[in-house]
Image (tube, rainbow, N blue to C red; front, side, top):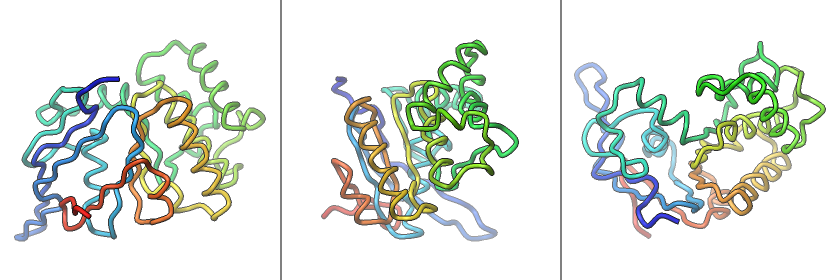
Length: 227
């Protein structure tokens, strides 16, 4: 296990200009994510936690400050290089699932591998294996509209693992699920952390979900709040 954090944010600011007003979503945020840990970032709506998640996930770059992924500063990268880095290193599980309704479950899971240049047969084989692993081996050719919310979430989990990323980011992952399905999802997440040794960062406003993590960081007004 590496000694340096796998992700590190140093004095990170994110400022949005809205007309004549500047809105500081993050205000000098410092955050480290260690390899192999399960971190929950908790905060109320508007606290800056989703903005922090976007920066951790290389979906955005800071207005000021530095974001390091495996010791490499992504803050100065262009969008093309940033896309390649996050495509290889980070898997995303979104609250809205973000599946493509015109594609089957198999094709949705294959998509990240296509962007990374995996051969077609390898894409098909790995996607089928991952969907079977999450209990959807009999739903490979179903489209999202033919699946329940819980099944769609499992497709999203399989897709997040497609390129075997080092880090899994989950943004309010149970927000659109009933309590029983949400509980099943969290069991999947714990299993990924425990058995696959994935680094997991989860953004949530839910106390019960946050307690599943090995470490909780609280964010308010764009800054970490020590408790």
